[in-house]
Length: 484
Image (cartoon, rainbow, N blue to C red; front, side, top):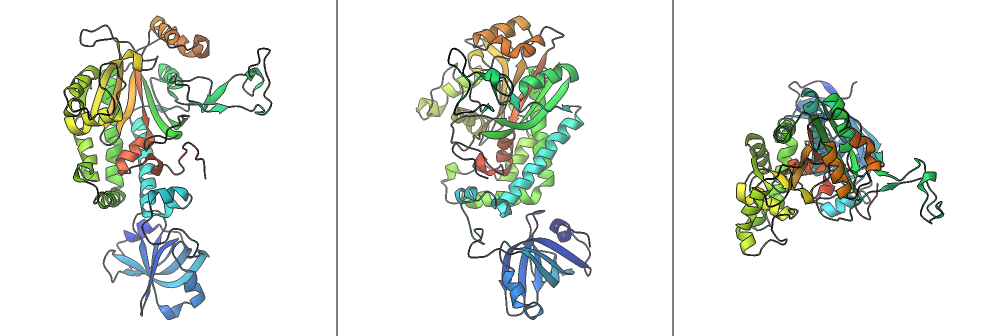
């Protein structure tokens, strides 16, 4: 008999036929006349109920049917006698694949804290919350690939091990095969990386962007979607040491085209989740409402989760320059009353509190900021022509800001002029010899091009309404934490 997922069984329009369901026991409830077993196989947020008659099965078998046990239950699919589901299984056979001792199994039917569940990340996908998050994560990943494929992009696999630092931040994980106790040394006493596996210093990638640009300057439109690594000693609810990045790069796209693509892209993938993950999103919405009941009104989400997602999909994003944003912040009540933790002034790198004020309080919708000060942005961004509208030199950068998150997308038009790019590389202290191949693309058939990066976990965080980025990736990697 072919295995039918619980999701398919629950949607069945016919009854009276024999089926076998396989999954894990969520709960077992006994009454005088029947034993009710809730089974879930991960295909849906909803459980399938199996009903067993007490005298029909041995006490030894029923004793092993406990929360967490893996079972196969065969029987007849019938109309449910209770509320909450259309169908249930009238059990005729129960087989226990793997028992779960109730005295030791940590996921008993009660409320568990997120902190506790992070300590048992190998089991937390069996909870309603995390199974819902992981199904939504899958749907969003599929939607990403579908969007780019449908729009003529090519999926480019950029290297995980690189010898360049795309962001110039220096917060990288080093890759080496050298003996760390006795590394080879040069005559000057420094580590001799010429004897390492790659013959030079290498690290885990912080971004596939630079290599992505090479692809765009041949294939016109490419995207990357892969793991990236930042060795930031940050323990916030918004940072991970290992995360997944989506990075499209497009030849012949200027700043306006880049903004249009970013807005259309996030609306499309969120719309896909709304269409295909309705049950999981509704469960997470109810979870968030319940979680916020004890919070002051000012700290609660302004909209229920589904309404918030629909609002983003159905409304145009506000577009303003960085300079205009600074003017708004300087005139804001929090600034005048000195309630911002960080100072406001032209030239600052906007903090999350500033971004969230613009999105949540001032415009009350997603915002795209453009034309940032050159000094706080990366070397590869195209420099604007001098303007009277800004106090200093700016670049054609654009950041997409979301409620509850702050920056969710960062991108720019890239500098295609060789002389300007080389000067900027030298200005920020990068050795041109280390990225000769990147610079050379500006000498041979250079073209206007743009791109952006979206941290996938921040997107999942926004769509699921979860409060901590460690809860939207199966096995989070953070400072002092590399379990599982």
